[in-house]
Image 1: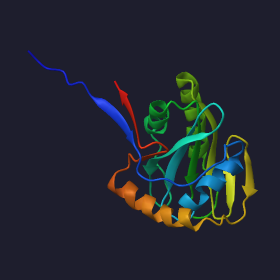
Image 2 (image 1 turned 60 degrees about the vertical axis):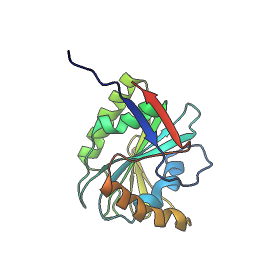
Image 3 (image 1 turned 135 degrees about the vertical axis):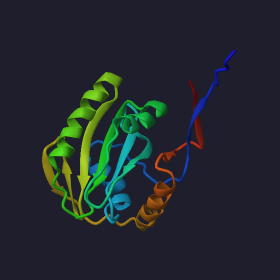
Amino acid sequence: MNSIDVVGIRLVKEREFLCEKSIRTPLDAVEVLANELKFLDREILMTLNMNSKNKIINAHVCSIGSANMGIVDPKSVFKSALLSGANRVMIIHNHPSGDCTPSQEDIDVTNLLIKGGRILEIEVLDHIVIGENEYYSIVGDRQEKYTEINNTDNLQNSYESLELCENNDKKIWLEEDVTEMII
């Protein structure tokens, strides 16, 4: 007789950064994550998982790419959102070149993720590309400048987060210490 393992899936807090605001605009998301991403030497794709009132539940590093190419796995994008009970996500990635102009692949994957989110009943609010001092809202189809964000704690954390990601690309940051979901 074969045995079947019963497993548990946990979201574990790796670290935290301060954010009191709800995400109402692409600029709000940029202000939260720009210093996490803009100085890195490779593309990092993150999600901000949010509740129905746009309050951030957690942030998740979904993938780490190279200097000029990112990897987007839709399962990874939505996994943390599903486990967190998120109703909405904001997808953000950087362009290490500093040019926030989205590639055709960025636009195509955004459309794919929006469709996938509809099936999962998780609204994809936007996909934002962060450059040096500009960002591009793919859903809004516009490029905007942002001012320097004076949060040196998040700047230091950007390098720490990359190190964490290199060790394990499935890191999920939570407000709570541990959230557990048994499947």
